[in-house]
Amino acid sequence: MTHHRRGPKLCCMLPRGAVLRPGERFAGFAADRASGASYGQGRAIDVPFPILPLMPFGLTYELDLVFMTQHPSWNMHEYALIRTSAGLVWLLKDAREGTMEQTIIADVDAIDDWMPEVPVQRRRQAITVDADLGAERIRVDLAYDNWDGDRTEAHFAGRFPRRLQRKRNGSTMRHSQGQLLAVLDLSHQDLGRGHVSIAGVRQKPARIFGVPVTAALQQTQGGLVTGRWTQSAVDGGTRTTFAARSGAQVPRDWTVRRLDGSGAGPASTWAVQDDADRQLAARYLHGADGALELRELRAWQKGQSAAGFALHLSPALPDLRREFAGEVRCRWVGDVAGQLAHATGTMTARWTPDGPEVEVRPERPWWVWDRPLRASVRSAGAGVAVSVDRIPTVGRPPSNRRCTWPVTAPSGVSEEKRPDIE
Image 1 (cartoon, rainbow, N blue to C red):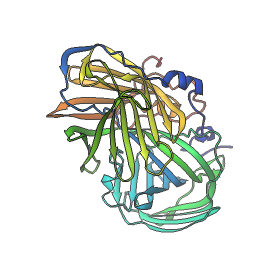
Image 2: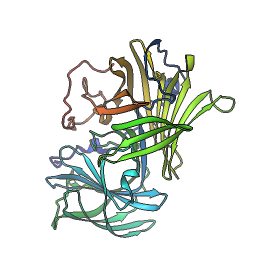
Image 3: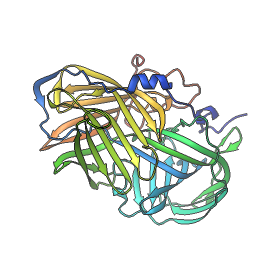
């Protein structure tokens, strides 16, 4: 049997397990370890707050309806039901054919203020929804104008996703590859029946081994973002101001608090940003001469039982306010929705003539390997400016990649041929 020319092989869509065994993860990341950086007295960034060189995100889909079609411009359509402080909200995501860049449409006030750290094109727009969401069966009819202005209608009928997956580490299928280092916890899924019509034309479904790709899922997405933000000092902490794709500037305040370690856990400094829907947090170890070294990042959606994404570093990342000699390398592991070790890789920090940089190299699973990032931190007035960009891949995908899926770079990012990652 054959599969649709644009679709992945079936094995590429099947979730896998953790990328580290429990003992490996414990031995590698349970203990706090200082960076070992050799700090000097030279160039420095004189700010009173700990620097946030990377930004996490995490989002749980209570229900996610997925359609893959043969439309020449659109590859996949996802219609997700999200729990927010204002109630349940439909989030409509369409992925471009080729680049797999996603657009978001939702009937949400001040949509740029909602998870401003996520650099995906978005707009507020009215959506027509007729849904019957039962405990066993669901039916959903949606109508909206897509990003290109074409009237789009979708119908889904089937069972509520109830099949708990034994292996939950799901492929991102190249979605938003140029914008996000993303990993998934795909907890439940079931096939269903449905169709998508665009501009009055019912689209032919993409098929894998003869089966139309129409499914209902429950999943959590998390990871690290690309983008631009500034950091400045405010009373009690720091302020990050995100540059939205629309051009809007979205500020968020963080509380910075030092914990002396007399209770649970060692002495640490926490930077925490809270809003009505989610909490972002960073924990720093206390190093020599007041150094604050990044140990973990968390993105926690309100109402969920675990962080949507948690990143742990071992050893910690050096304090980027202070010049240090050479390169400092650490390993990282990413947990999604309480599921341990869904991704792992390395980070390398260095000082350049322009300021500090951090290079993030994912290693496993293979569907994050081709999403490396570089964070650059520069002095900007009384604060700092951070830019995080996709960079070229190096070497070859890890050996556990068992099926063919195009490894391509987003527009403007070329692939480099270098030796394999160690």
